[in-house]
Amino acid sequence: MKLVDAEVQLRLAMEHTGDERVVRSCINSFISTARSVTMVMERESNDNKSLVDWYKSKTAGFKTSADASMWEYFAENRTYTIHKGVIAPARITAQITDFKKNGIPQVISPDATMTFIRFANPPAGNPNDSGGIYRLCTAYLQLLSGLVAEWVAQRSALKLQSDKPHP
Image (cartoon, rainbow, N blue to C red):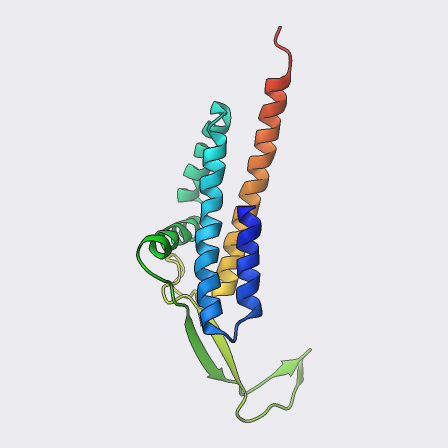
């Protein structure tokens, strides 16, 4: 459920890009809700020592994984948004000087602009990261979705093992 709630918050932010208040509120809610997915899995693992061991081993591996900065970034931002303040994404507006559709130049208004919304403090690890909120939140959601799928499979496998009759 928490994962679905996080998906909804991200979708709402994307659908209301023009409303800075909605984007800010939805992104803060997304960060809080998405990060709580792991906390729920940890709590729900407590009934099975093998699942707890698997979960702890899996999450310990995050610190050395290629996605370590992403896991750390969202954990730190959840702490910030819950306990300290509000994350306010930065809006950057740029003039569009050239636009092509399927490689074909398109006529555009001389005052055409685009707005890019980014985290003011993108994750460490990639100095060239643009910090785009939608890209980073989507990437984090994909990591969480993968973890949840693995956790559910592991929980099911352990339940099947425990349901087997013992000689």
